[in-house]
Image (cartoon, rainbow, N blue to C red):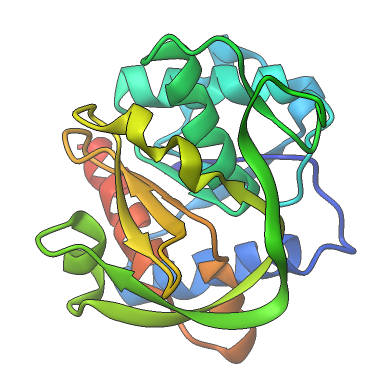
Amino acid sequence: MKIGLIGDYSENITAHRAIPVAIGLASKSLSRTFEIYWVNSDQISIRDLKRYSGIWCVPASPYINMENVLEVINFARIEDIPFLGTCGGYQHAALEFARNALGFSNAENAEVKPDAEMPLISALACKMVEVSDQIYFQANSNIESIYGENTTNEEYRCGFGVNRDYLQIFDGSEMKFTGFDSEGDPRVLEIPKNRFFLGTAFQPERSALNGQPHPIIQSFLEAAGNACK
């Protein structure tokens, strides 16, 4: 089973070093084997994406080619390929849905376009760099089911996030925001109808640096494995 890691790999990025370890730990806990393939954002071929059992859009944005990444997320969402987006991947999952499912073609990432008319992705009031924080899950959400509880403490390294001022555009849509911090800022998104479609502002892969398998990554790989059956 093959997992496509979509982003611009750098050994200097902690999350990128952690992801293979995190997949290894989760694979061991599931007693299954997964091969991983890094795909830089400027080297994406949509026709090759069907080879992957799961797609993980990884941290470290802005990406070299943001439009390519949005195409990948669109493909995973429409084709119902198990998808995980962490940090930058979470941000761009929201952006892709706003543009392509909700019709907000002017939705933008302010990190790329600071003067955007609709900065759906905007600078955080306080950067979440090398910090951890509490997240609270909505009842009966997929993320609550994954954890088996309604709150958790997770690690971040991000300066941008989904702008809470635009959350109302997602009301009544297939994409739900189901995790929030104590200030009410969104931290988790999901599409419940898909077999697995989850985005987190935090970086669950970092748990691997302490030798701990993470329930989100286990659930993602389990869905990817089941998709192959």
